[in-house]
Length: 119
Picture 1 (cartoon, rainbow, N blue to C red):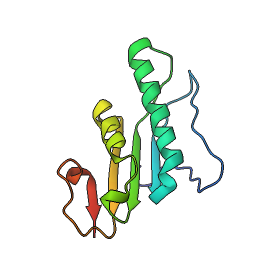
Picture 2: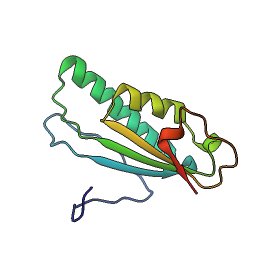
Picture 3: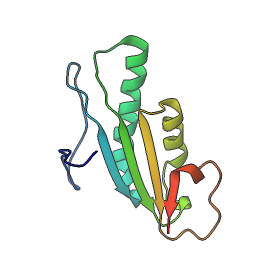
Picture 4: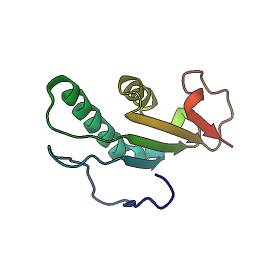
């Protein structure tokens, strides 16, 4: 997003992301904390599937980018972190993530370091 961008915000509740072929592409910003990653991880997997199909078969889906912001106390509490890193590597520039930790006491592993911020 840039200054003056129009955004839609949804907090909690029943939500999903199901783009249809022919829909205009949208860029998603997903924000999760702790176990709140569960529904957003499902959305990420769905988008990855659509990207995979799009590259292989040209399904007509026009997909934008996805930026995930995910916060937890420490890196050991970041659920699905290896899967998320795998999605970023599989779809560079299309799926990105910034992890944030608030109470990290130990060294952050090298694989996560470029993607982690904290206090």
